Image 1 (cartoon, rainbow, N blue to C red):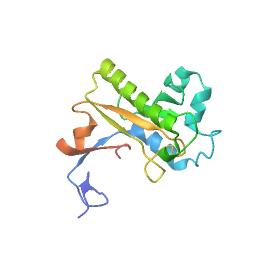
Image 2: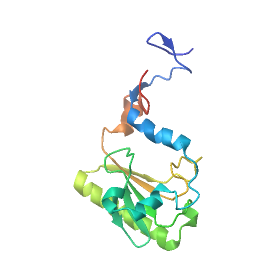
Image 3: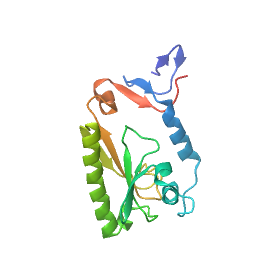
Image 4: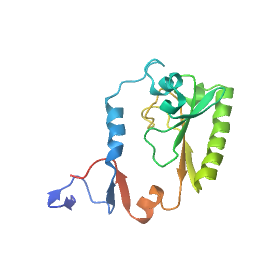
Length: 169
């Protein structure tokens, strides 16, 4: 039986979750729907950061093979990405040096975030390919997302609430 909200029939079956509206995230989703593949470094937003001043590009560290950048659309405050300089899309394409430095910079980012913000946990990972959920599938990047007790991690489990990136109608 479809759910009825404010007298309107909603699609699908009710799942028992309330919704927390996060319309600021829709810009990220809409941009991802409309963009074409970044076929080379000339149109890749992560490659473009390399030509910009660090402050403008949100780059917080440059290593030998990789750099660390604040996420333009963070899931939580302090959300970082560790990216190789080379325009590669797959972890399997990374050289040993790139792979190793990604690990070292991820550890360093975790230590710094813990020290300056009292981070209690982390989500660390990378989505591979557009189908795997990568927003910029053509340029490898690893997310480092700080977590705290009571942030969005527990909304679905404890509060039976999901964050949705659209405005209520």
